[in-house]
Amino acid sequence: MADTGHGITTGAVARHLGVSPTTLRSWDQRYGIGPAARVGGRHRRWAPADVAMLEEMCRLTASGVPPAEAARAARTGRSRPGESAGTGARPAAPSLPEVPGPGRRETGTLVPRAAPRQPGSGNGLPLGDVRRECRGLARAAVRLDGPTLDILLRDAVADHGLVTAWEEVMAPTLHAVGRKWESSGDRYVEVEHLLSWHVSTALRLVTPAGPGPTAPVLLACVPAEQHTLPLEALAAGLAERGLPSRMFGAAVPAEALDAAVRRTGPAAVVLWSQARSTASHALAQHVAASSFGVKGARTHPLVMLAGPGWAGRTVQPGMLRPGGLREALETLSRLTTKTESPVPE
Image (cartoon, rainbow, N blue to C red; front, side, top):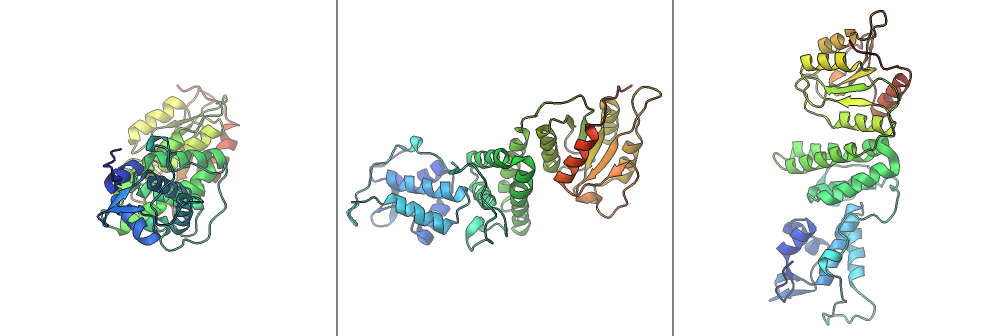
């Protein structure tokens, strides 16, 4: 990072931290998180100790600390015993590449649910009463801070397991970003895309516990359905339990789904529909009627109708509609542990 001799420019610091220059100016104006000296009394120039203070601010907010509280802690950390007020003396600070980046955790556990959102927290996202980690995740997403998103998501899964991390950290933050995008025109689209990508990456990193001799669970979005993250969460939950699955992703054509069912002989087929316009009960009935296996011992898969698109419809025999990820995993766990893998024709 270039230093002009009078300190580092705001633009250079913003690029280093992964935040916008507007955010740095806002922190200076609202919380007093600004440089100790200015060129010509107006232009911000950041000394190494100032940058270290900003990195501490980013680290604290990424872990869920409200900005005002994080600012007080960061300002305290900049001052050192024996430093004379108004002298401009700054303590030595490590070079920028050596300073830990934002998102580094203090503890190994998720903290309990926080109090309702305080004004100015969560970068304006409609989070409501959520875990503190949701706020850190939201702030990292708004800053477009991919490395911090990876750290926070990985730690959430490692500390509490896939189901809790999905239900209490990932999904609430995704919903908040989606609501903000819907109410802000074209703003925050990039935030939603980045957060979705990193959530997907975290889900795929869940290590299988080791598959057993059971038939797989087939996971697919119905034709025209593009929302895959809930299915990816289910696939990760199955992997965590050592249960085999086959993920076919978004908008699977009916013919391809039929071929996949007959070729894999699954214990269950999970069909995801986000909206009623994509839910196809004719397709679900066709899958439920599919049969495979050797003659005289043919079997049918259980069809699980997952997602809000199936709401308000009568569930036919051979189908189930789970109330959420946890219920779906429990049902599939009981089913697959009792099912021998059939031999498709």
